[in-house]
Image 1 (cartoon, one colour):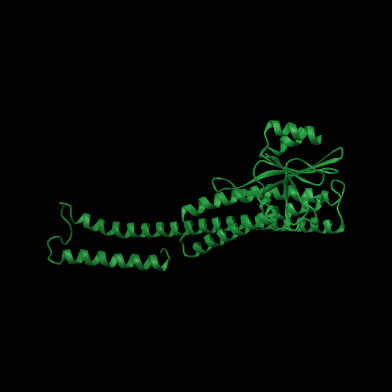
Image 2 (cartoon, one colour):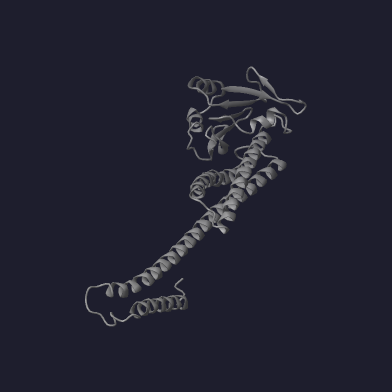
Length: 309
């Protein structure tokens, strides 16, 4: 799908055009082979870079071909299965064109269509930075939700209410955070190269925006690392608690086994059909029972003294 959007500084709303005109934003979403051929022919683009933008594993980077810059980034969104994933987004910045190419709908597109942001497609460099800002805000939102989810699971750990499902959630969260890191860290290098001004002309205000984007990106990376560390700490704490509880249970069972086994030795001896001391005495039964009771209490006292349970 190829759409052409136009909005000048004086326009109140963004218009969708039937064809390209100077100063418009060329929005490309999940293009077909014929649409790729049309883009290459109309705007003299490198087809290889366009195909790279449709590769789900493409990493953020920056390329320059003649007078056109190809800026690859990744944005996060929820797919049909409600899973958090990242996909590549390509900005093509030329002397008089701005093209975005993505596999799926750009989440920030609605903000521009509904005029929630003050922008103009004629200010191409600023528009690129505004889209990058919205992408960064989406990352911040998802990372913040992840942090809250981790804190919720950590609070249940205090009450020993953590379940196997929580550990399954941890695996999913770790995958999401690692995917965010693999997208955000290369983006930092891309933003630093943009600051040089060789790939896209930047005014002083634009440079400030790029610096803010770089700072926000670095904070997002730190937040991801912090969340991953929290998950490791929770997992290690739960493992230690489980190991301690298992050791305690084994000690209790061992003491119980000894307490039950020793009296059975004497009961077994006096249950044999052989001559035994005091077997004809009327107090023999009570003596054996009394001795075993005393022995049990001595074993319990010894176990408590040695803190076996």
